[in-house]
Length: 446
Image (tube, rainbow, N blue to C red):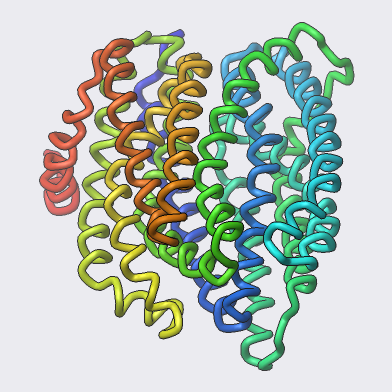
């Protein structure tokens, strides 16, 4: 398959612009919601809300990653008469997995509410099940659009969903109305419905289903998706497990401070997330047409571009940690400053880990990616058990830093072996990024 160079160039410009806009808007609106939420809730209630979101993120990841990347990969390279068969088969798998995970949540919610000393979580989880079935359908729509290399629905549905929730918080703040955790969950459900409607409006043109479940394609999708799901689940579990363990071993108030440090450091993750979104489908296509050699340059340049943008942001956030926390979260959360400085150190490693997963999955090495993530996340959990009990909440961020260093070293070995990728080469592209941008901004090609 030959790839038209004009198409590739327009793809990167179009999808890159939309994806970056999505990440920026997600961050701005998400941060706006955070800004008002910490002022509308007590420290303990905010910690409980964080634990609620951490739990449901695991369910979303388990369900979405089972079908999402497999659907994008196979639909993007399939012939037209096969695409509808793949879409319908993946939808049945999607709904089946959603039903199973819903039952799991109902079963474990009393246990979680007890270990975190938050009885309200039981009713919050039951309300959330409405959102869970809706987001299952929305994930299907968004994946189809990405397979057709169109990112507009992903951007708009996410934007309107978060904007609706932010609007509710702003109104409550202006009216000095104290929202309960149950009310926050109800508005979360409504915002999900808003996003799903937008996704359907974009994806419906591709939804002429071949209404027959294909066992052959189901096996392909599950064989691919099981490793993607396990990889993402372990990666997410490693991230949210820090908060869960802090909540269980310390308190929900400690979870609040830990979460705020992560929230602010997420400002440095916008380009990482944006690049991962557009590299995956392009990586799948280029691997099919150009082979392994294309992956080396794709990885090194994408990581280098991210590092060029992330590094200055990390330096600024590190130097001004206290005033930044004071502005965004208030004086009562200044204890999060030392935590923020440690989280910023591993922000420079996240572009490597995120793009490693993207490249391995887009080239079919899902099992290897799963095993690497399984090893490092298990290592992270073991570290947390000792470090949190000895050092308190800052032990959790030290554990995360050490785990990411281990991931970096492990990834360096396998990427060198498979694609001849040099993990120091991205810094060369990071340095070249600035003069290249300068030339494009101030000099026109003759």
